[in-house]
Amino acid sequence: MASTILNAPCTVPSVKGFDTQNYAGLRPTSSLRFNSGRTSFSGRSQHLFVVKASERQDGHVKKVDMSIEECEAAVVAGNAPEAPPVPPKPAAPVGTPVIQPLQLSRRPRRNRRSPALRASFQETSISPANFVYPLFIHEGQDDTPIGAMPGCYRLGWRHGLVEEVAKARDVGVNSIVLFPKVPDALKSPTGDEAYNDNGLVPRAIRLLKDKFPDLVIYTDVALDPYSSDGHDGIVREDGVIMNDETVHQLCKQAVSQARAGADVVSPSDMMDGRVGAIRAALDAEGFNHVSIMSYTAKYASSFYGPFREALDSNPRFGDKKTYQMNPANYREALIEAHADESEGADILLVKPGLPYLDIIRLLREKSPLPIAAYQVSGEYSMIKAGGVLKMIDEERVMMESLMCLRRAGADIILTYFALQAARCLCGEKR
Ligand code: PBG
Image: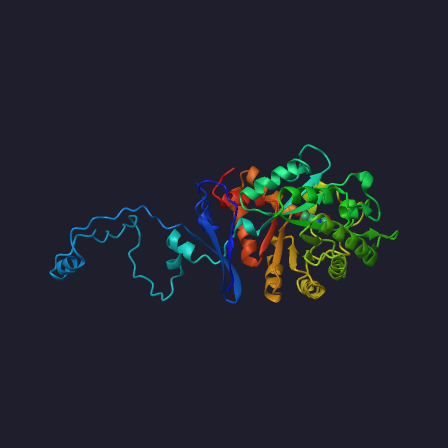
């Protein structure tokens, strides 16, 4: 049973109002260490966080006037010191029916009756270390708000991006994934800007690695931000998305990102055979230490709408149904998972998240690889909108949705809530 020390760099001073213990058992103070123990539960691994405060050494020893023997003798003689009486039974409201208690051998409520008991038996936990923070970047100097995603911005890669990453690291989020807004003039049918070593993404990676060498940088591997057709692959004149030719481009894109310093390249394009081809291309260039997170089960979902607005990456015609999966399909995810596993994927991703919990659970049970869930733009925006309209409690729904993704079996979660949720877990409210 492996045990690791998680040094979540959490600079927030105190735990306030928010009911953090239901979510994390992660408490920030400078004198605390976070011990992350992985424990086996019904054959599945769960994360437990045990917070161990350093022992109190205040040097104060209480003076006693009786020896142990004298105390024991007093009790034996029937002179036990006073202790508070058993409290009276709390009264039920007038009119409560007087009944015979049910004869139940099992009362599950017993294990839920106090916050301490509930915390003891909580099966799933969540910590900022589980989050990957997706960030939109552009060539501009200002950060521009994304209309359909309140709270998200296209960040200037030289300033806004660096500041946002610093804020995330402050609350223990040390993994990000980059999505570029590429100028139209650089888009083309074959998406060649995707492997420009001095393109927006490689420049941003180099800057971030220079400032934060231990930051974990994930990249998106797909042609859509660079394609004048807005598709993830090269489009033939009859509208067919060309698989193998696209994979050729994706390999160059992944190598270019690795060269800039990416830690994990993440093909999100859903072309066949791209994981194996990218693995071979990375290895051939000496990047065998760079991981591949495969978008294994990526569905043709309407939940991506706000993201496509953010990047202006809507397909210029048609839809993505010849490469992304049919939302009606479950078994097909296994075909994709087996292919990605055998081709050398390091992490399997399911996308979207909350509407696809069954797929997350399926892959968790069928594969020993780490599982990622992507809580996509539409999921984020719905929670934000519901919160703004005061129809739901945004913060609680946010935390519950993330916890449910973990419960379903996700090790890591890509979420636009990463910073906000990590702040909650660290006891800081916005
Ligand atoms: C494109 C890509 C998409 C997302 C991540 N990478 C959109 C798409 O497939 O059209 C969506 C993410 C989100 O909605 O948050 N390769």
